[in-house]
Length: 232
Image (cartoon, rainbow, N blue to C red):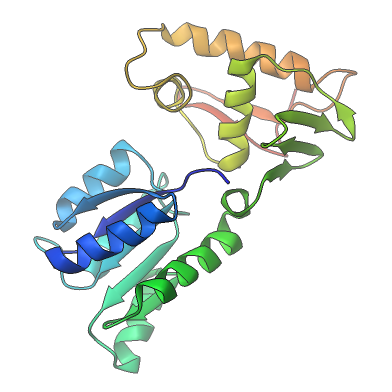
């Protein structure tokens, strides 16, 4: 299973510690903040796979954080689960209308929360829930480290493999060269940005073998995306 990155926005320290412990046990990477403004900054710096968002947090309400995450193209598709002591139907509806994917009322069982998060991720990011990543006619077995396109085995170098895996986990998302360097090569990398272009070219050459359609889209002045509508 690919390791999922969770952003937890919760100002109850004891509850945040409990939730963090349970999700780290399930192999989630958890970033935590008590502050709504900081949550928006963290989500921009590193796009999470899922956000657990308390209704009542410091500086900005959870509802406003949810609204702004949905308005920002980079985080518009990130699944959001609202956590709240408010159990009234009207509040639940308001949370969902603002863009939340699910709604959990306190007090809740941590095991139930883990199950609800798993269900949301399976629905919106199936790549995180299984060992095979697929997009169009490409299939990646993340356990056996094998890639096939239309059933044909595609040999990839380790960097091209990591690049393709990153794209397959975020289909349709546009990644800048800087973001790709961070995610694929790591924060401490001193590799030049143009190296990304070289590896993208190698990846294209490998997966487009036999004149197959190019599914990596170059977005002018922005970066690259995995896109079934990409042109050659």
